[in-house]
Image 1 (cartoon, rainbow, N blue to C red):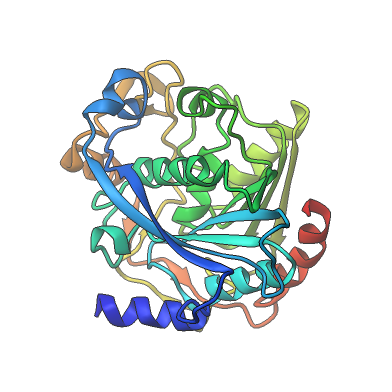
Image 2 (cartoon, one colour; image 1 turned 90 degrees about the horizontal axis):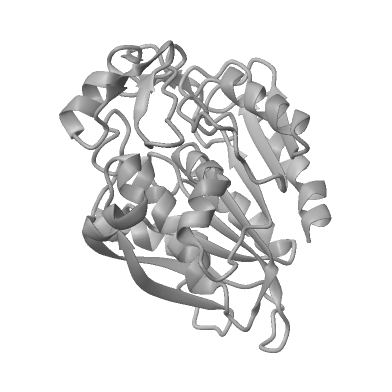
Length: 326
């Protein structure tokens, strides 16, 4: 099944064609559990993991030009048709695109209903390693490398905008030029609000009950008050994956996080109860982590699927954004 899904991805992304504008790239990352294990000497104790992704250039690319790049990460159900449609839109707009395969690299098909078989911390690290991998690529304009993602991938892009993480992981002036995020989770963020002030855009349905929009709206407002360039497009009555390939339906195995708030202590990197900083959760232990989720998250009420009215809205909004960022 994994092989069939990967071939489907390659066909839809045009990657089975032998050409000089595409390349499978393999590199080293890690498997991490616990935000505190991303920092200092603790990162060295996390197990190494070989990962891969696909770099593809515009069809008319040549070997001498430099291209802006979008590093993209999928959601909790791996790569889906609507993600790949965005990748093609980006590529047709003149961007190189790198599609991270964090699930396929680890023989994982999904994290829906299981947020511990591949953690956000691991995804964040994968994306950082991808930026390092491509930073000095002679065909990439590293002044214009953007992080992008959907759901879990959106949270991955967002966390890579946190300044303390950037300072910890990027030692050779690597930096993202901006961040594009579709329905990220904004309910578990560092409590210092020390974010990159470069361009950021979030696309969400205002009825999303998988990754609720209110914490993202609040984040955008705080960032802009602090001099950031943060933006959010909220589509009325739309749910999670409002731009996706399947109709709106109940996802019984998915957690709804609309009642959750898990701040991360910016000093200790531990997750704590929102109204009691002394009450911490052990996110380095899968069982304790799941127990923490169950204090507020619930299954059986998550709706996800395309919005008849707004299914194409983010693609249309992205047109002018890509022109601006290029």
